[in-house]
Length: 177
Image: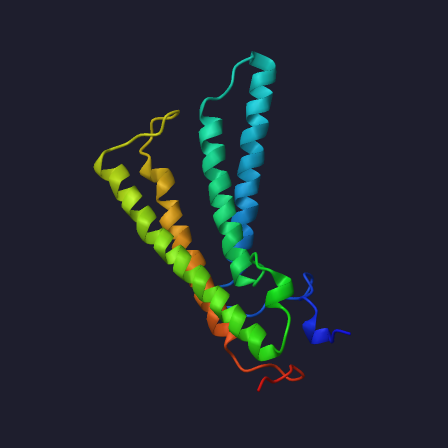
C-alpha cells in the first residue's frame, strides 16, 4: 500500500510559495487566451459576412500560441507539474524523489538557458538583417524576442524549483539513509 506522502500532489491544493508570484503566469495565460479567442472570433465574423479574411490573424495567432505554450510551461515548471515518468520519479524513498526532482529541475534550467542563448542569436540576426514578418511586414524580432525572454523565465522557475526541492523534508516525510 502506498502512504499519503507517495501519492501525487492534489491539483486543487494551494501552490507552494515562490519568490515570484505564480499569478503572473496565470494572468498572462488568461490574457493570451482571451486575445486568441477575440482574434479568431473577429476573423470568423469578417469571413462570414465578407468572404474575406484578415491576413494578419494567422500570423498573430501562431505567435500567441507559442507565447501561450511558453507561459504555460513556466507555470508547469514552477508548480512541479512538468512532464516526467511519474512511476520512476515518484517512487522510492523521499531522498531519492528529492534527488530526482532536483536533477530534473537542473536539466530543465540548463535546457532553457541554452535555448535563451541560441534564440537570442536568432533575434540578433532578425535585427541585423532587418527581417520583416510575411503577412504584416512588422520587424520579425517583435515576435522572436519573446522566445529568449520566456526561456529565461522558465530557467528561473526551474532554478526556484531546484532550490525548493532541496529543502529539508516536511514533518511526516520519510527520511533516506
